[in-house]
Length: 375
Ligand code: ZN
Ligand code: ZN
Ligand code: ZN
Image 1: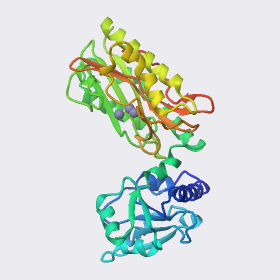
Image 2: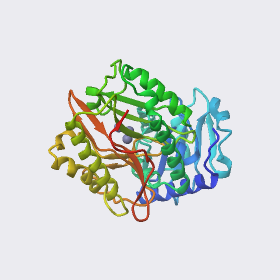
Image 3: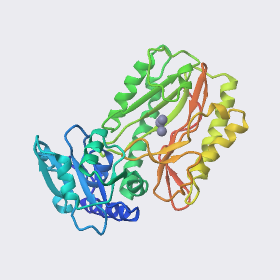
Image 4: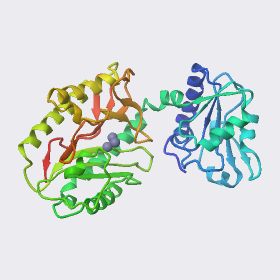
């Protein structure tokens, strides 16, 4: 656990989380391991049955933040700047009630915010320890911070984008007729690691009819000459910031004219949606910009998902680029623009770039050619 983030940034995030919590009338945030905890203090790892929990009072409450942690896991915190951040470490031993420990530290809150990813066992344990206190999700508080990436975070996302672009640039090495999706996927996963990721978190190789299933994985299907293949790949860098990029390829020769035609519509839709991204435009306006040309071509029913999702320490996070989301975009927001067209039983196509909102538009973090590349 050696955080790449300077401790001054963590101090700032803790302070702002407390301020936003106060604005939301939340007295206390309770943060179990996961990406929210990683964002706030650099602690990696996931939740399990023994409670680890950051107890973070809203601004204006006297108690300092504390990290409740099982005694046997305390040595693992050595790399974190907890002392510098003024976070007290409070250990507990098997047989103690860690939830009562949290309520002792909490100092009489009336509303507590629990991170969205907290396991139900801990949610219920905390409810029993705070019987009179209203529990709510901390997501609306923490997303106010995580949605707006600072320059160091944007730099990480940019590096992740460049790394996954290098994998797409090598696709001709992997994607060939006569190979199974699984074989191709294994090579891609190895390349994702070679190009600097710490994990190949997802590798979608959707060939032929499998391309019509947006979240297809890989299968034993043998890729044939003439197939259209959707390749959607990504994962985290060592810092935890993720890549996510989709390109669609035609394998072994020119695709049918009808494929070319539909693909041109998709490419136009993706361009229009990216062109729509700038501050004060809403998330749903970007979604509409992608949807309109696809609908006009009579393919509206074939675009079966939202246009995009935020990305950062999680592959899917706020802001979601979806109809009904009136959130106004701001500089530093990072998300995917990934319209798709899916013809059940036949083929599918998707084009996905990560973009970051700038002062007057956006920066694309993926720059590989977006046309239907023939391999
Ligand atoms: Zn997806
Ligand atoms: Zn995506
Ligand atoms: Zn993707």
